[in-house]
Length: 87
Image 1: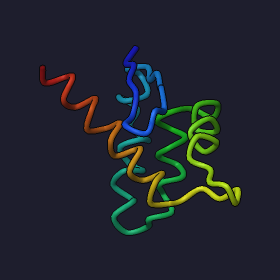
Image 2 (image 1 turned 135 degrees about the horizontal axis):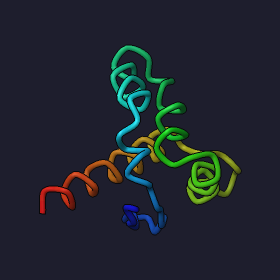
Image 3 (image 1 turned 180 degrees about the vertical axis):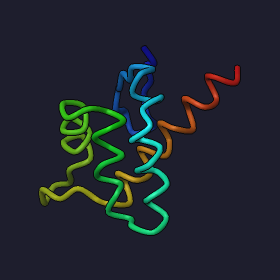
């Protein structure tokens, strides 16, 4: 189980099986041509419950979730996990 906390304060847990999921790799590859694949990436990476918590964590005072903030959080999670694996 990989655990971490983003700079914004979102705490997450990701099973190694989720990171090794081929469909996650497909979705990551598809983002290059279809940015909407980020939705699939978030759900495959975090699972439905944590994805929902992340959206609530990022929701602003108007009730909206910034695409940029969501993308940054996911990127940070991947970068942090890559750094931990290489340590």
